[in-house]
Structure formats: structure tokens, C-alpha cells
Image (tube, rainbow, N blue to C red):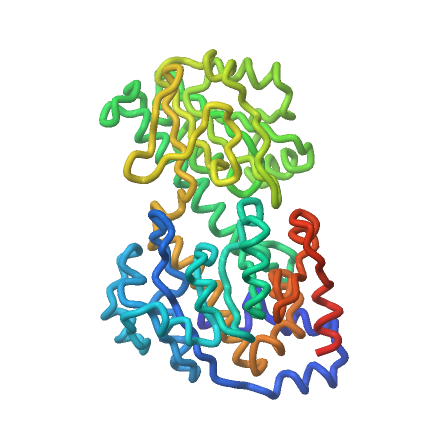
Length: 406
């Protein structure tokens, strides 16, 4: 976080879209920020938006940070860690929402929306597919700036939050599957991987995106036989090149998939559908044909799941068995390793906040930085996300046009 000049989200990269005189003018208006971090209230959400190391950096740059008592507990950060970093610990959420910028991990709860004030800025996940129309309209009525961190892009057009969380989810899914195969959890007693003279376990991965890539890397590293399916030939070819080795890849053809599932020991569901429900890829009939004791990890469950037999579970009771196949369907898999996930998020958010301060506030930052601007879905009470507007039937405006008039 200290290496500011090499930041993946550096607004200086984006400023090429603006006249030089205008860029210099915006860059002069440095200001102090008031940042609030509430305690997450969603079920088993253990992550926190900013870790103490990020708070130190922000405070040393002249910014004020308030955090609700216990907000870092799920990620094993004590209140004392934050107070020593320079944050002010407050007892209630209302005090946090007095801040000009509120940093959350999960989307705002309805009660939290009630606490918002005009011109306030909220960073959080959007999860577009699950929000009803009245939720978004209530948020619009508050006349705030709402920024979906999952839609923020870096200078290379990548989505850093999605990529970081995808890497963690992919790696973690294989570790979970390994545990579920072992005797400790009543599994088949297999080691995920292989040793000399013993056939390797077979892992089928559905999806060749970031989650699928890192699941494949972990499984290959353990010695498993990996087979990857996706509906994009481009993604499959890219993944094969990134892995620097030949692995079984196939387009999502039902007959081919059905045949491979019959011999699979582990199936990882990593299909993502941007801004809509994940399509069902694996039918109940396919599950019935799998070997008894096989393991399914449905990472796509937060978007509906890609297995017909999936149903949402939680970290307290993460699995169920159907047709003799173990199903793991916890929607927030990165919360299982909350400290690592929080550090990854914090690395991204701290840099953005420092940039906001350098540009004199959120408006200046958004005008200069196209990547962060891409995450805005409500600007001063105006819906700016086209897909969300079309999905819910709400009128919207182009954020670039709004910023041009600012």
C-alpha cells in the first residue's frame, strides 16, 4: 500500500482522458477525509473493509477514521489494533454513518440505508441480481454516491476486487474439497492429489475464469488430475496458456460433461454470470450418476448455483448429502478466510481513499479516474448503471455525462 506510484488504480493513468490543464487543476485540491467502517451485519460475514495497517496509512495522510466496536473481530482484528492505528472506536452504527465516506463489504442493509445522508459516499458490494426495485429506489431517494467495488476497474481494464476474491475462493475451494474427501469428515478417505503408485483424484472444474484458474492451480499443485469446462473457447485457451501446461479442457457439452462427472471425485462450480442468475449446468440426473462420496463445491451459489441439487448452506452447517454426493454450498466462501480476504480488500480500498484525498474529494477523484467511475451506480441520487436500470425498469443517466457537467 505504501508504493503509491505503482498503484494499479492510479488516477494518473486515467487522467490522459482529460485536458492537461484540467488535470492539474483537479489535482491541487487535496483534502482530509472522514471515513467510517461499520460492523458487518450479514449472516457470517467476517470480513472488514479496512485492516489496521491501512488505517495507519490513512491517518498518517491526515484522514480521520471511525470504526464500530467489534467490526474487525471476525477477521481477528481487535479494537485495540484499530485504536493503536489511529482510528476512533465508536459504540454505535449511527456514529459511523456520520462519516462522509462509509466503507462496507456487504451491500447496505435496509436499516443502514435509513442512516444515510445526502452527498454521502458508500463503497460496498452491489450483488445486482438480488436487489429488488424498492431497495434501489430507497437508495436513490437518499441522494448519495453509491459505488460498487466489484465493478471498479484498474488501469488495465481488470476488476481487482473480483480478481482478488476469485483467487481466494478458487484456492480455498480445493482445500475444502480435500477436507471433505478425508476420513475426518466422513469422506471416502482419499487424499486430494496423488502419490506414486496410487491413481490421482479427479477434479472437474466448471468455469475458466479467475476462480476456476486458481482452483486448477491448487488442484494441480496437489497432484490431482484436472479437467476444465467452460462455454468460452477463448477462456479455455487463455487458461491453458496461463497454466503453462496441457490440461483437459472442453466446451460445456452435456454429453461430454456427463461422462466426466461419472469418474470425478471433486466438482468445483465456478460459473459466473455477470449481473444475473447463474445458469444450471449440472442436472440432478448427472449428480445421480456420480460416484458415492464424491464432493461438489458450488462457489456460484451466491448467484443461484450451477448444480440443480444445490441449496444454500452456511459456515456452521456447510454441507449436505444428496444422491450420496457431498454438497458444499456456502455463498460467502471468502469469509471462511476472513483475515486474508480483508487484507486483500484493504490493499485496494486504501489506495482508492488516498487518491480521493489527493483529488479533494470523491467528485474530483471520479472525474479523474475512469476505473473507479465505472463502479458508480448511483451519483447524487441519480441511477447511473445501465444494466441495473434496464433490469429494474428505472431511468438512468450516463455517469460520464454527469461528470462532464460537474
